[in-house]
Image (cartoon, rainbow, N blue to C red; front, side, top):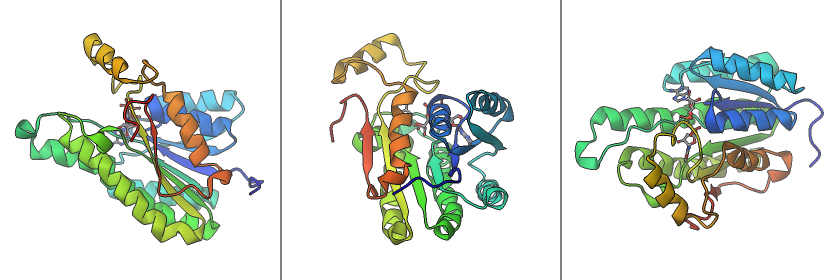
Length: 249
Ligand code: NAI
């Protein structure tokens, strides 16, 4: 299918740093107008400037994805402003690690709210604009923790695993409307989320990987770029694992 003449509009959550920042930069470099969504405006404004200096197009949306009403309103606002919403990347995510016996209700609920409920709210808000445009590309960033489990992450793994069933369900519901929904499951990627791992843990992890090295945010951005492209219309309901050969499942 030929790319649209008008810029496709992408909404990327958690765009202020790490994987989300790399995704936003890549989508902008690929010619999308990217709405940079995260909690604090400062880093988003810096990224917007960086994207514009590179010849791309972006706008800033300060929103806490844990606040469902605010998130839905933000997405509706994008449609009102641009008259279209083509791409949604549910990337914002948090960890609140603890072993099962020590995990509090609050730790469980907070992770489920930010990692899973936000994706539900965002997809529900984005579905109508995408249906109007007869085109949509939804990608949710899960984790290998959600596929194979990880000690200390019962909450996080549950939220990421649930994104798979959720995405496959909406892929079935929306497939005839030109809308696809896929999951990308990163392994260990060098970001703020993993920077505090002790060196011996990082070395142990590297030993488990076919490529013997941690991934970069750009490795995930490349997969998102494909899954959200016009040419990926036949890719839906899939989990694309980008983990340096850690799980191979
Ligand atoms: P990070 O901690 O560096 O960045 C997370 C981003 O989400 C930040 O922009 C942060 O401001 C935003 N965010 C967090 N809570 C938010 C909220 N309530 N409202 C709005 N924005 C919020 O994390 P990283 O590593 O870039 O992770 C991005 C995604 O990739 C997450 O969903 C994470 O679970 C997933 N992932 C990361 C892996 C890694 O090794 N770094 C591995 C597997 C999955």
